[in-house]
Length: 494
Ligand code: AMP
Ligand code: MG
Image (cartoon, rainbow, N blue to C red; front, side, top):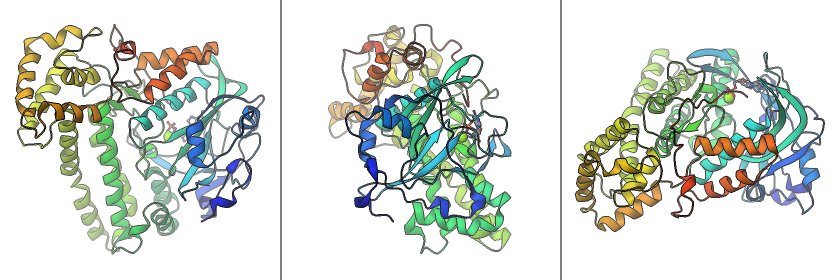
């Protein structure tokens, strides 16, 4: 690995292992030059974590570098090849509008992929223009950073640079390039590409992934099987976290499922207001495949796709390999439900979960569903002695159907060692007071992208960087929209 103490100008310290893999795994390609780069957003904390150093008056140089107009030292720009199951159908994909610039080595020897999104066409673009709108890149920046501050593994956003060029969608919009940062952009879909289109490389590629992400497994008895198990655990933890905060990813295709277990590809994602397991926001998810409550079973389905790609490495005997992988995958349900149960107990401030707590959880979820209660605020109401004074939901916590449940909950948490006080502490740690509510996100983006007014964006980002803080002063950031979600829709690939 490269020594970060000998970094280049601006602190770039690239060590590009992906570029040394077989050429069939990527296409070397520079980001397209843009007309008039101008910096819209810069994440100073993340830059520091990465070891990047830009001085005071560096807006211009940042704009040049993070638009792709000026390449950082030692970068090796490339578009990665991958495939994937989109809504259940296998397709060849690849970075159609993204360029991996390099792998940054930080001061504490961590490795991060630095990728530009919206950087022009690549051989994998199919019919796409390779571009991204300012609006959607600002959205990804905001929500990915919010996820990070919620304590959920995610890609992060370093910069948004306006290109000074127009992007044609349903309307003409300003274009932008987002710099996203991830442990790596290797996905289930990368394994599918290798296994089905470059099968001769599956062994080398799997070894690379193990060495890069899970080096402890290299010497194990069956590294491929243990890799699979590891990814399964990471995905379970991730989806449990999504369910905790009411996040719908929206397009859990296998190409959008990361091997190191990070949330990424923020196209059609959204947070639920009113709780409903069948909630869908994505305009193209007609059958609710990626609905809120379907996320666990889709994660399992995707893991099945990963398992199939690893079969030849799990055992030379095909039948034995299938049987072994199937057995591992079959553990998903129990592992998931155990972790989900523990998480929900945490949301309710229960210290030592007991079997009967499952009923308490289920009854609350049913109640929320029937009364279209806000998912986030219901837990705040529980914490707050059974009431939540603001917004359209205010009255429902006074109804007998809720107060009856609440009394039983009080009796239950009285059995915590630290009683109610401890319950409230646990609730605070596991329930955000602030989530990126869709209507607030839209307002902030509208002001920024259409009117160049970034004040609402920065205010929202600031609140979302302390999502677990309890304060009465920001109630307007806690209310769901008065008219509910009423037809709110999200879109892919914009
Ligand atoms: P996504 O839905 O963002 O996961 O993208 C699915 C596939 O479409 C990936 O191969 C993307 O690179 C590609 N894609 C999305 N938007 C564009 C675009 N504007 N131009 C070219 N390719 C795109
Ligand atoms: Mg994708």
